[in-house]
Amino acid sequence: MDSRPIGMFDSGVGGLTVLKEVMEECIGEKVIYLGDTKSFPYGNKTKESIINLCKNAIDFLIKKDVKAIIIACGTATSQALEEMQKCYNIPIIGIIDSTVDYIKNKGYKNIGVIATRGTIRSNGWQNKIDEKVENATTTNKECPLLAQMAEEGWTENEIAKLVIAEYLKGFKNIECLILGCTHYPLFKNIIENKLGKNVDVINTGEMLAKTLNETLKSSNIANEEKEAKEYEIYLTDMETNFINVASKLLKDDNIVEKIKLAEY
Ligand code: DGL
Image 1 (cartoon, rainbow, N blue to C red):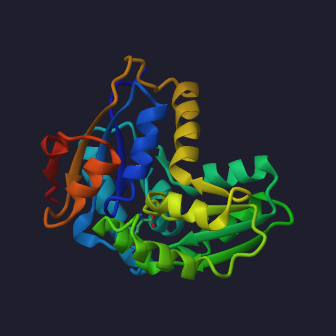
Image 2: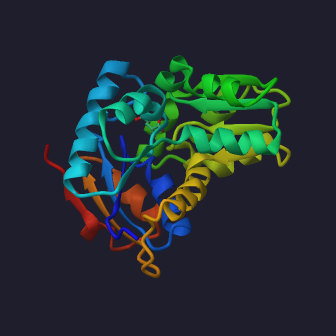
């Protein structure tokens, strides 16, 4: 048993979709979440910039004495996970592997991926699918507007419906659609309505939380305290709409008390 918290980070509110799933699945765990809002968006930055931002975020979380790090961001997972695993002597988990394992187990062959520009151009999803899923056909689409809209809380309005309809135009006969950016589960209802019930719309946070729970238990580092479900949030910049979106997503009216400025 290891009662230290889990560290988690993203560029903004997106990773909270992962936090939410981890809180539900790993009930004894405490989480320290870092939203690197000062550097948002990650999706249009170079790989070198993403690597530096990840190092800063991980150094900050390690100082908080976390037992593992979750990169709750598709852009950072696809461009920096391997590099971070080489640099640090602490378990670091990204969002891609658990979702691709799920797809393999389900036997899906016709796969859609939507993600940020940086993620799609890095081929992070495509390469992992090609490595693990035989005879898969993958259709990728970069959707640069969606993370920004999620930060604004524009996830259920008419503009969101129009933008999503435009981005989903090219997907034909897919069996599943990977929400390859952690901001996108905020649009899950609109996306599911658009694609119909025959397409499995995959929230990567849900997949990650299941794998994480199993990994923590099998490595004897799970926190066995009953219903800890605690989290603290640090932001690198307070001038954002983060609090509004976060309190709605996490259904937490006292979220302001849990948010502090991260200075590094
Ligand atoms: N939520 C992130 C991702 O999963 C980052 C989005 C952004 O900052 O552009 O890719």
